[in-house]
Image (cartoon, rainbow, N blue to C red; front, side, top):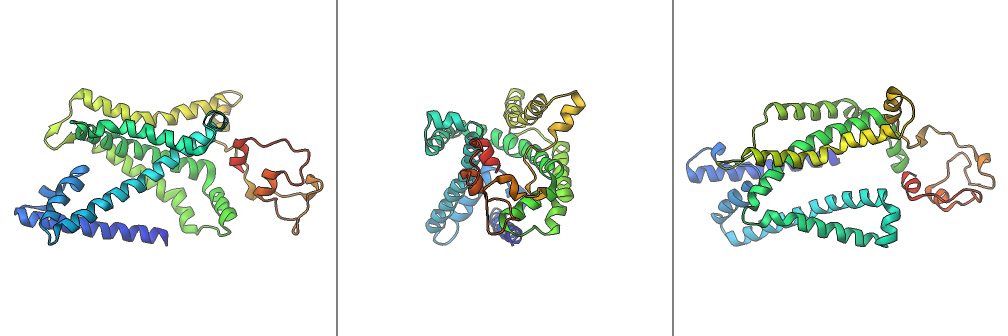
Amino acid sequence: MIACINSATSLLAGFAIFSVMGYMAFLQGTTVEEVATQGPGLAFVVYPQAIATMPVSPLWAILFFIMLLLLGIDSQFCTVEVIVTTLYDHFHPLIRKYLKRKEVLVLLVCCVSYLLGLPNIAQGGMYFFQLIDFYAAAISLMVIAFFEVVAISWIYGANRLARNIEEMTGNKPWLYFIVCWYGLSPILIGGIMIFGFIQYTPVRYGDYYYPGWGQAIGWVIASLSIICLPIGAIHAMLKEKGGFVERFMASLKSKIPDRGSLTFEPEQFGSYRKENPTLPPSYNDISGHKGFPSAPPLSPVQESAL
């Protein structure tokens, strides 16, 4: 249902966008290809020009820019939550020691993001924004998405992910989704990434072509997120023991126990009792150590893994 709603929303947005482009092309006596533009030009140049010619244009202008504001806030929610969760999981003891509360971390992330975004509203901010949009939102995103789906589907395992979803929701995903995770998604994302590199053209804004040093800055921006992939792989291999091949193979195995394939033995937990002893203990039982008087305290990493 979610996938269908997502696709239907994309089709509806396509009709809305290209109808406005066709309308602008009709007014200017040109073709849609001449009117069409990418990036901020579509939202802040083409659409305002079209709205200005509509009946009750001030009302449509207010609704349009309120929509843009809500879209930006919605996107910011996702971005901030990913950063905060990553920092909180990896540096939990330091954050609890110095920041005390998670809300302080959220405020700190928002303030740093605000300061980093200030160059975008400077006099030449549109050129800086176009550079970030081209290299960070297009190139690095495809590379990260490809390796992410490969790591989850082929290394962690699509069937294992399906068991995790069944454990959390009580319903196992359809076979269609497992097939997509194993084959269709990596192939499609990999194909988009390859053709993107084949059809690569240097970034430009309107008729302005960025110089070599500007493109170099763009590739540095793109590499800031891509470089985390080899660094993480090297770090995982250094933590293992043995030769290169043994370290490499061990780093490909998930350290999270596959609870779907484990058998529960009630007698291993002493006085632990449940109405149905064949079921494993719940998260609250484990994190609270009910029935486990000799168990050591769980670390934040172990609790998050559970």
